[in-house]
Image (cartoon, rainbow, N blue to C red):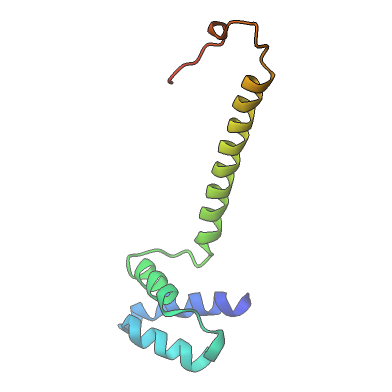
Length: 102
């Protein structure tokens, strides 16, 4: 984990030294070997830092958490709706349940 942070720091400063993305990736590969980030990840971070981002934290984790939370909410809503229809008495009219498109 610490190596990934170190690599992000390197990627952050190489554009300021006028290095290209390919040069940055080659240097990381030389120093970290098999533990280096993929070329795709280096490119993504390089572009992000090149456009002014200063954050070296892993923003993908935050995005993943939001997506995971959203999927959980959809799942829970679907479960509630399903339980309404499954547990709703068959003899009662469905007109009593109000559905709003908004």
